[in-house]
Image (tube, rainbow over all chains, first blue to last red):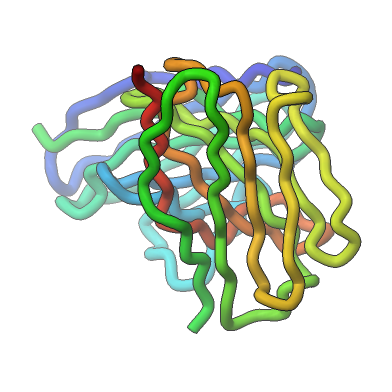
Length: 107
Length: 119
């Protein structure tokens, strides 16, 4: 199975800060990488698909980049409503696998 | 309205079975696979498998092979996931999610079903 390693596992930042999360795949997955946001008590929500494509109606402050084994997810200006856990997920090879998650909190 | 609505919370004893439903609406049922994802308390997301609503074909991750069955009913536009021989470490929230056939992103999720396994 492809292992997805996310870092950091948690972070604390101020409103307006730029936040960056990385996801590393254990083998080349091209651009077959998605990012999800999970607010506590809610189902995950798709934000970015195929590494860098913004899902419909998702604010443009969320961006993704990368290919191969190294990927980055960025919130350009952290907002209070962005408090959540963020997960990467590869869809290159079955079984689909997720990163361990990054919990984002407000400082 | 495009949505996936799951059945309610369940409490089961070890060794029992549970069947969770995922009722879809607002889109062409057969255009999207239905996947099931498990999330243990305080833990991450774990993909379990999918069912093809058109053919009924399934694919399960090896961890759940032999203990999970995914089915669908096209007349009611509902997908089902049954887990047998429940253990206490199966206590989790189970989500259904869809992906457009040919694409890899889960663009719509159910609200989740809490399954508690306890003696």
